[in-house]
Every structure is written in structure tokens, then in C-alpha cells.
Length: 174
Image (cartoon, rainbow, N blue to C red; front, side, top):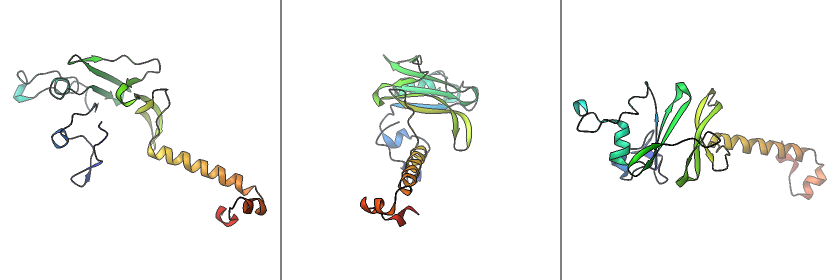
């Protein structure tokens, strides 16, 4: 996750970070397990990899040196977060909220169970350091829409004279 990475690459929406195009190592890498998680936890160095295969864990820890590495197992609703300390990943314990503080970003990473994108699942989500869930753009838009609807309802209860005194055209409330 890097603040200055544009949402598109070569004119297409990106789904991943491309180190050889960015030239800046990310602060955090989040791997979503597709199998049993062994690929994401593989510490095989280049000298021992069969057919030149190098373990993802080794690459992030020793080659790229990503400060935070998370492995999310959707099927188990479980996340592991590692922090690079003295060139070695250490498994971070969750805080008392069950989240993992990512101090440089002033956020916490954790699992939220709920409805999102029409699916009731455990989702990997961000919270602020006080434990408040950071809303997605869609969620923020919903909150703002609900606020506007409440304001309009309150305004509709006012008389035409009261609305005019506030500089509001009653026709705008229809």
C-alpha cells in the first residue's frame, strides 16, 4: 500500500502493485490465500528453490523487505500479520480489539463480519487507531444520502414562510 500509487497502470484499472513499475517498495502487502496458505508462507530462498521457485514469504521479507505482510485466509476468516523487525518477520499479536496496528498509517487491520457488496462474509477491513471502522466510498455515500434524506424530511415539516425565511425554495424539496 503506497499513498502515491495511481489507481490505473498503462490506462487500465490495477488490481495489484507492480514493483518493477513503481520502484518503491510498499509499506504493506496483503496476500489472499487461494489454497492452503503454504504458498504465502513459503520461506524458500533462491538457492534452494526447485526450478528457481522462491517462496513468497522469503521474497517479501528478504528481497523486497516489506515492513508489514498480511496473510488472509478467507475460508477460515483468519488473518496473520507480520512486522519486519531487524530484517526478520515477527508475527504480530492482535490488540485487544482483535486488530493489527499499522503504525505508520495510523490504522488497524482486522476482520469485519457483515454485509458488503451484497455478500454476508468476513471481510478484511481498516479501522482508525480509536477502533472506528473506516468506511468504504460506497458506505460514506450511503451515510451522506441518509443524512440528506433526514434533513429534507425535517425541512418538509416547516411552513412555506419558514423555508423562505431560510432562503430555501420549497420546490427544491420535491
